[in-house]
Image 1 (cartoon, one colour):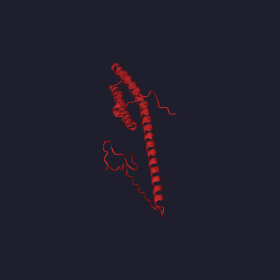
Image 2 (cartoon, rainbow, N blue to C red):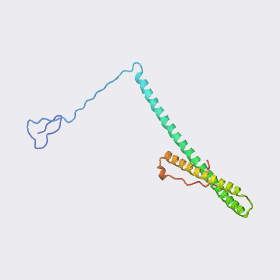
Image 3 (cartoon, one colour):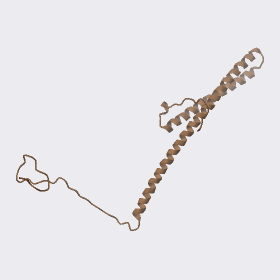
Image 4 (tube, rainbow, N blue to C red):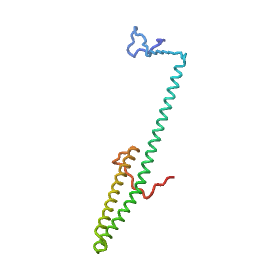
Amino acid sequence: MGRAGRGCAAPAGAGTASSAPATLLNAGVEISYEADLFGRLARNRDAAALDAESRQALLHSTRLLVQAETAQAYLGLRALDVERALVRDTVAAYADTLRLTQRRHQAGDIAELDVVRVDAEVAATEAEALALDRQRAALEHALAVLVGAPASQFGLDAGPGPPRCP
């Protein structure tokens, strides 16, 4: 005894004569259409496309800006490394000059004023070296922000010489 029709079969053991097949799926489709008599929809579509292009261009411009800032910070950092090396060498030369001037003062060749002047030069140059160290740390932190790394975990060793561009 088979039943033909739409629906699903009754579960096993439910064989009552009054059971009717059940519908499993109800599907409804609604279609609407708006006539574009004055081109409003076409203009809206074109405006949306232009807006998407504008946003894409803005994203590209922002990426380019970040890349330029990163390159500028890196090259500035490397230039500062060269300047720091020069100032450190100058501090060492002034320290040698101070020792020589102190010996000459002890020997009676020069006045104490010369020793004080050279000592002031050493102190000023050491202060300049410390200022360059602070500038380097600030540039290094800016570079860390630009590359998306935590500043506390980011570090670049001082370069051996002047930066070279390809």
